[in-house]
Length: 324
Image: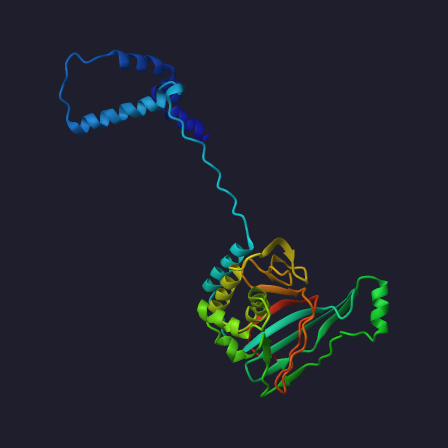
């Protein structure tokens, strides 16, 4: 074998075994001998010999005199917090190249609770370029009940909460999202500032009177993080969220459709974001606060108030072409 060949080619007088066998006698002779007279040695040679002697002493002196290096301290495992997750997400978004396309596409599965013990789920898609687009049909409608009594009560009430919607294309239609007191269109979302002070000012202007600053930022996040806003704007929003007090993190969370993620809940407990730690994309938003009251909107627009128990799972969002 190769190991045996190398061993047979190595002279015995330089093997480790023979060296150890005679090292005690060698060291005894080395330290007992004294030069009869001092001889001048070139500085470079003397330095080399001293270094070699020091190395030999460290290597072969009795173990009680050998300097022992302390055992390496194992690196502490980083502890995740809601703040660290949000800040890491901001950095991820800033490194993510901007997408391009004509139509902003969203595929969302919505979960509502029209009655106690009843959950209605459905999936819808939109493609929109700011003026033209298409709305897909409502699909995969499913209703679940906490128990048989809840199912009977729901049917007796006429099955409230069932979504209705057929596929249709549209032209010249302006879609707007209600973010607090602001009616926001697609172009407005694209122009949201990335500067922190400017974005905070925009949020403050949109925040309804009596609404907490942190809670409103979380409510607005579900719109902004899944919109055509720039990655820099989204990163800034995550940093604003990260500086709030009282955030709670669940490292073993799943969104309403079962995808694993990290969930972050605000101090009120009303708003939860579930994010993908690899991409910093928003997987889901869950609202567990009191039912919001409808507010007046301009003619031709509709604002849907949030209801307790409502959840949105963002299956797809990004730029694409209009299908077929």
